[in-house]
Length: 475
Image (tube, rainbow, N blue to C red):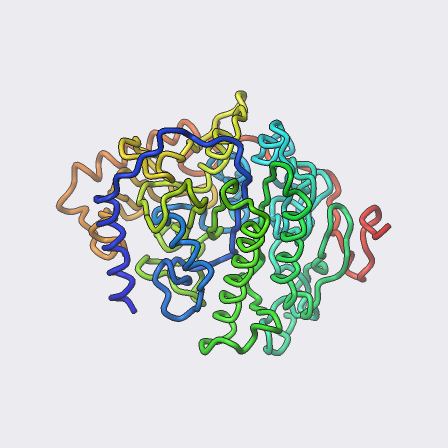
């Protein structure tokens, strides 16, 4: 399998060199669908080398679209979503050391200008169907951040009490609660500001289908206007709960079952777009919010979720827009979550927020394979929480702690440290890293970090006794 994936990567590089596609005109005002999977590994799907998981719909999407093979998220959930929402490095918009948990007193600030708010200035209908994870207090929920509609979970599907099956996967016994350890409040399934129910194992198994049905409904209801659908799945984050129609159907266990269910979901969404006659008007991106865990496969990348090795941040990404994005192609240009807001805004003819710094750029030239496109990013910074851990310039990447240097084209797996024979490059990249100290800071919060959104007296959405927080009950 390693050989097959390495061949895939080599073929990608060859395509990059041979590609000569140019779009004279930039299309305007497409619909947008952004599908993000939680914890999906780089090689967990067919278009990126999987030989374990059957992903025919994603295979077709890649055949009809373009793979982005150097697309970066963040090492963990909340920061990655902040980058998508704001077009900024996570540390700039959500300066926290890790992820957000239930009933925290902080999250993404309501003063941030999100991708949904930008698109609403051009009349787009906006919806998030899935996991939010940018703050669960009333002031921090999606409809305060530009979304007309929300259906889903406020944070990860593992954030809840042991007795609800939240800390164990399908078929596993409930974990024991350690004596004296405080449990998390029950996990709520929500529609807008209403708690629909306390999430239990049957709900975990139904979550992909629930999200998919809601997404299809939104598409049908908004087919005659411009729309932005953000579909951040809870799968394949632990606990692993493939749907009842998929559990046990793959030969490789419940993780593969769930990946294959997600492939079904993507197929149903894209089939709906085709059925509604919107495929020539709709720009779709599929990706993951961070690198895969050890349950999945990140080959040929090194490392996993939570790290700044490529396997922690480089994620499998496909761009699809039949008739506009060149089919069956790839790009190795450095791109990432930070670039989605500027790119979507440019195509929609929307103004970017002028009173704040954005780190992302319009990557449309790379998505359509414009031959003379300038590099999207001369330098890319790898943050883990508040700490800068690595920098990339062109094909070269330097891990700062041990001054390890890797050439990511010749050595995508970061196995051969060539710092000893390239001392000048190491010195130059250390200088590049130092430039960030006066902006976001190398550690802690630098002057370029914007304030968090904060609330007083945070409370859980469902109380430990199972009662729903006042104001969030079903009407």
